[in-house]
Image (cartoon, rainbow, N blue to C red; front, side, top):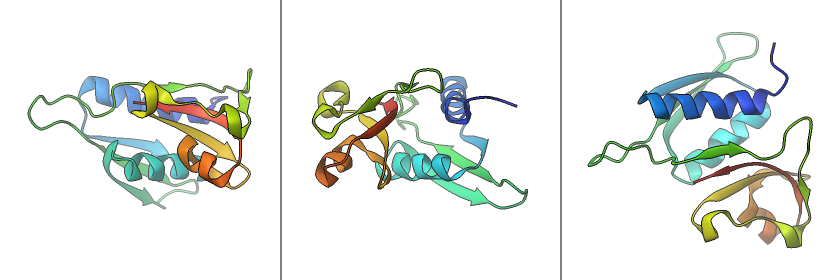
Length: 132
């Protein structure tokens, strides 16, 4: 049993792209599914599939690589808020990652979204992670 399932999700993705794997399997949850959909919409992963084989279900993620250099599209994925130290921000303090080139994923009262979407919706929340 692990205490931080989102950090486990991010670590599995990080380990998979550093090892050069094409597909990674992760136990599913609503927040993990929302993060996966955001990564797909922003172009950081190739595809994903939610499988309902077990009680919890699994997420299969196909990682995206640059065809010429065979490098992962994701350069860094890091957890910001943790169970021991939550990081909440208001709408005016939403982070810009790599001067707008990366994304910050934020859990708001209107759901999980990028910091750009949260700024448009005028809501703040908990900063989950940075991806670039």
